[in-house]
Every structure is written in structure tokens, then in C-alpha cells.
Length: 330
Image (cartoon, rainbow, N blue to C red; front, side, top):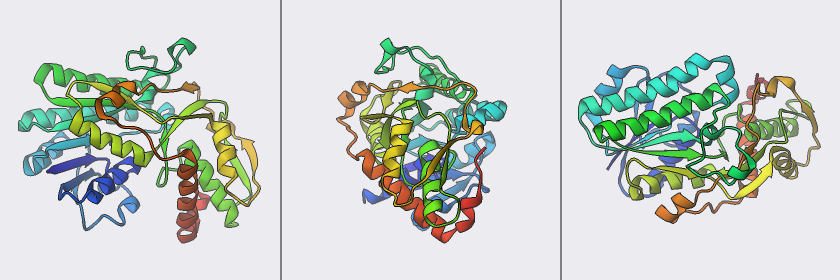
């Protein structure tokens, strides 16, 4: 079977490629990526996957690759996925996520292939929900609170439209908070883990810069998430949409306290105004009953292991590349 992953160099994409290869089922894995994308996450996969150079905004490149590969399954994970950046770059965020997804689906239609296509939307489409809407079901109204969330509403709806109009076999997911090793340092828990690791190694002062610590999140390990995506592509019917998320709910502050408990270095916590979003989503608790009933999937990796593995990742990363401790998230 031929599997194509967009965004393969990213956090989730690299874990998904690794998961598929570890199944040992002989699948051919192709990864769509831009030539300038960092490929550190693929260090152990280079000789096992085929990289395809293309940008989602280049329809001709997508058509060329789809004609050559003719994938059986497409996992569409590529996106501008950082909420805070979307406030500074709203047009680029919407262009990449909405137009890029439309290009991908147009390429499938033009080439006349018939893959199952996983479209990765986001729980951010629900925005700031009311307490009576928790836990959040797929029927919850959209209230997007950021340009990123708006772009994911567009991506979600484009995927549905191509299914309804052309019979293209899209299946949408709205993934809730997920994290783990290799997570970019623009995301809260990974950013915290990086700062703690840098302090342990003496690369920076023992201070953890934070934004809003009162937001409530339900956490899922990325390795549980990619297992869910694989099951989705094999067990779920086209045209459907599913919430996927973890089963451990904490505030960001409580999760940070848990992370700090795994370090021998005592760190001061400082709120940085630059890390506060213009508008924030502070309550995200998923109901993933629909997906569980369709696939039997359950999250199995405890949050404690997720945080320990993420901290261990940053310790090794900063030992090998101490200059990375100097980068500043804005």
C-alpha cells in the first residue's frame, strides 16, 4: 500500500511515518515537504521513506507527484499550526491551510485517483465553548477565536464539500491538545520543557516564561494520536468527522507543575506578556465517543510518560545543539 503524508517533517508527520514503518507491513511511505523544511525529525527515517519536494500552494507540483505515486491513503497534516503566529500572519495562515488543502483536493480530482484522505482539522474550530457544551461533541457550533481556527474551519468545510460534490473520500478529524517528544518549541508544554532542560544544562537562567496558565486542556500523547489516525483511515467511512483527544484534563499551570516535578533544577515561573494571545480558548475537553465507537481506540500513554519523554528529548537535543537554547519565542 502507498501512503503519502503531507507535513512529514513535522511533529505529528514524523511520528506517523515511524508508526507505519514499525508496523512491518511493507507499506511504501512518501512524504511531501518543502525543500527548506528542517528534516531533523526524520534522522532515523531517511533510508525508509521517499521525500517529495512540493509546496501545498503549488498545484502543478501536487498534480505531478500524485500522477507518479498514485497513493492509496493521504494523511494531510501539513499546516501553519501555531495559533499565536496566526495573529501576526493571518493571510499566510489562511492561504496555507485553506488554499493549500483545496489544491491538494483539486490535484486528487484532476489526476482522478481515489485515495482515502485524512484531513486534519482542529479542536480550535469550536473556540470558546459554553460550559453546557462540555465535553465537546462534533455537533458543537463553530466559534473560531483566532485566524488559525478560522483557517481550520475552512479546511474542514472544503474537505466536506469535495466529498459531497465529487465523492472524494475525505475523513475529517478535530484533534484536541496533543504533545510529546519532537513537539515544536512554539507550543506551550514543549516550550516549557525546553526551558527546563536548558536551565538544567546551565544554558540559561532557571526561569520558565509562560503565558496563560489557567486554560483547561485534555492532553493526548502524539503516539496515541498517530495510532488513532491509522485506525481512522482503515475503519471510518468517508464524509465523517471525528473528535480525537486524550482522557487527562488539567490546567496548563497544573501540567507545568507536573513537568517541573521531573527536574532537580528549581525554576522560577514568569508570565511573559508576549506569550498572551489577543483572544484565547480556555476550555477544551473532548467527547470522542463517536470515534471510540467506530474504531475501539482509546488513549493508553499516561501524561506522566509524555512529559518525561518530552523533557528527555529536549535534554538530548540541547546537549547536541546548545545554541538552540538561545532561540526566543515571540
